[in-house]
Each structure stands twice: as structure tokens, then as C-alpha cells.
Image 1 (tube, helix red, strand yellow):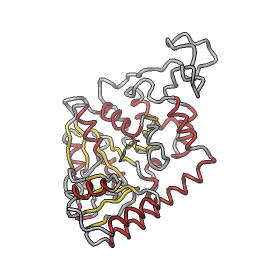
Image 2 (tube, rainbow, N blue to C red):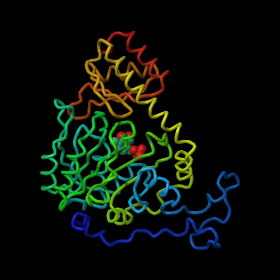
Image 3 (tube, protein in one colour):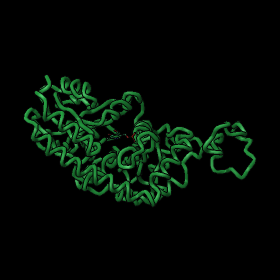
Image 4 (cartoon, helix red, strand yellow):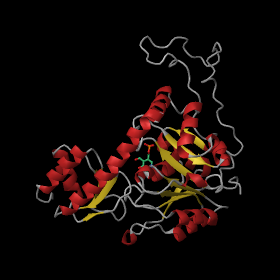
Length: 356
Ligand SMILES: Cc1ncc(COP(=O)(O)O)c(C=O)c1O
């Protein structure tokens, strides 16, 4: 099965920007109009040079981390940039559509709008643990949705999606759509990544990020994992030099062998803080619901979300109001922080009247 019929016809066969140096520092570089000197104060002596289009060492590192071939991934400026590249590659502006399952991560809608792609909303079912309407997604694919977005664990609900059903959906829409499974929070869940299937499921795309489990939100590093065919096609749609040398170095430092144990410990700590935060919040009499979560945040229902956000802010905490999401009126999302931060938040909530 080829994705040729799904990809934008006008981009198919395009080779994208080839890059023009990056790793070729043994030559006298007179091909990129670079400044021959690094700045007077530079921690990186090669900062005056354009970087590699895809930094080989980091590609190898992440391929090892995710258990896929280096040819099965593209590193992007965060997973957000991956969402952008995918919609650009598959949706012709004014013609094609995406499908998403609200309550959903807001960037699917944001980038679809930027690309002039219509949006099919296929809502999750809150009465059934935010389960996915796979039938609805297959129907959307029959009505022009070329990219079907799923997120597991889902932001903002924290719920996971049945992997067998995702694979069935891929098969069902194989001629019409690619299925993107956004695994930004997978490291905090018990599910294995679907990356293991990209070599045999030709229309499956997995999104990963180093922003969450790897503590690199400020570096902007995300990964598209997909078949070699999709990866080589999407190379044509990414920007010329997406990754700065400093972002690449941050990625290499964070994922160095000697840092693995600490990163793993922190993931475990977040998971255990999530559990104790959920238990503590369930004891707060004015909190109506604390939803189960497999991510590094909790979704809670309260009497008045806007009032709670304001009250929390006045006491030094930033929380996220989710009331604009369909079905999530008076819901608030709370990221899991350190034990001390969580203790202070719980004390604040336990000792106050219901904020209204
Ligand atoms: C579900 C989901 N996908 C993707 C992203 C974007 O991640 P990145 O920081 O890598 O752009 C986020 C960020 O919050 C997210 O919640």
C-alpha cells in the first residue's frame, strides 16, 4: 500500500530543500554566505555555520530510543511542527480536511485552519471514559478527511485509546487517509508506543516529543515516526533548517546514556505524584470529579472553573481552564509538578471555601 493517493499531488515527488552543508566542516565553506567567524562570545565554535537539515547523531539516538530505523523518523521543532508538516503534506488548501476527536489538543485545529483544511469533529464519549468513535472517524475519511488525529494519552482528558482499534482503523481507511497517533504523553502511561507498527502499517504516523518526559519544552524537539515512504515524502514539506545547533545539543545531552536513569526516575515520580494528587483532590469536598489520567496532568470538574483559575492565580498557581472544549464546561487541567508544589496546591484547595 502506498500513500501516494493520499498525499498532496502537487508535492508528491518534490525533493524539498536539500540543505547545504551542516556536517561538511572539513571544507572551506564558501557556499552558504555564512560569517567566517563565530560571535565574539560563543559557547559553540560552529554557531556561525548553518546546521544539518537533520542532525545525524540525534536521529540515530532517537531511532534507538523509539526502536525504529533512522529512516523512519524526522525530527521537528516540537511535535507542533510535526502536526504542521503533516497537514501541509496531505491536505490541499480549500479542498481536503482533517478529523479530530474533541476534547482534543488545540493545535490540530490551529494548523488545519492555517492550511485551509476543513475540520471534521468526531467527539469522544465522556459517558464512556472518553472513548473514540472509530465509526465516525472512518466516515470522516470517506468524506474527505485525509488526516485523522488521535491522541493517546489524550490531552486534555488523560484517557488512552485502544491500540487494536487504531490499527483496525488504519486498515479500514488505508486508501483514503493517514492516521496520526499523538503520543506526546506516552512515557507516563503503561501503553507501549505504536511506533513498533510503522514499518508494516503504511498509513500510520506516530508523533513523539522531547518536551514532556525528557524535560525539553524549551528546546523545541519533536519527532514524526512513520514508514520510510511517509518520512521521505514529508522531508519535502519541512522547513530548510528546522533545528538549531543548540536544540540538537540539548537533545543529545538530555538523552545521553548517563542521564537515562534520572529521566526514568522523574517519570516514575510524576506518575506517583499524579496518583497521590488524584487521591488528595478527591478528598476536597467542592471538587466534583477527578478523572483517571495516564498523562502528566489531571482533569478535574469544579463548580466554577473561571473562579478557580483566578483564585489559584492569586495564590501563585497557573492552571488551565478547559471550559472552551466541547463537553468540558467548568473543567480545569492541572499539570503534575514536584511533591512540594503538589502539597502546597492540595493545602490551598483543602483549606478554602469553594471558589466562585
Ligand atoms: C497532545 C500534544 N501533542 C503535541 C504537543 C506539542 O508538543 P511540542 O512541545 O513537542 O510541540 C503537546 C503539547 O502540549 C500536546 O499536549
